[in-house]
Length: 183
Image (cartoon, rainbow, N blue to C red; front, top):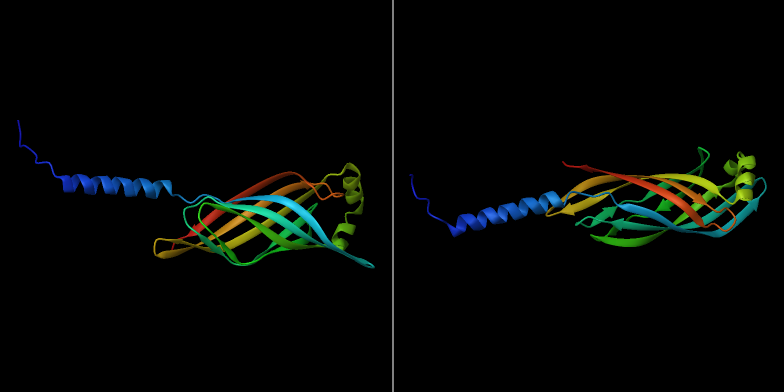
């Protein structure tokens, strides 16, 4: 028939290790992090006519589903009401462990002058106790894979319905998209 092939345990072990490494590499494809607004707390309300400002603390639950820790730089999240920039929240630089969750407390300031431009809509929203806000943020950082740091950017768009009287989060939709830069 043909030549008899000699079995080699070394070749079998190398083949199995290669298959295992390839499976691990393919299953470790980076996943987008998730963000959920947990609560909104009013910390101060300043009325210096004609200017009105509100300071808030936004509590955001962040999940890193990846197998690598991430380090990110500080940035600002923009908050919109009916398409107008209403304010911003500060995201401090930090890090997050692999496959973990953490709560971020983001200080935010809302500009009452911008809200005054939409006074009729705001009064209607208060009356029905539903106010729709949109937010957007770009978070840049690095993720260490083996011995190399890989830069990434996550863009998050949020569409949040809140009760403007009690500041309760009624409904939200968050979309995040991650881009990894390989140098």
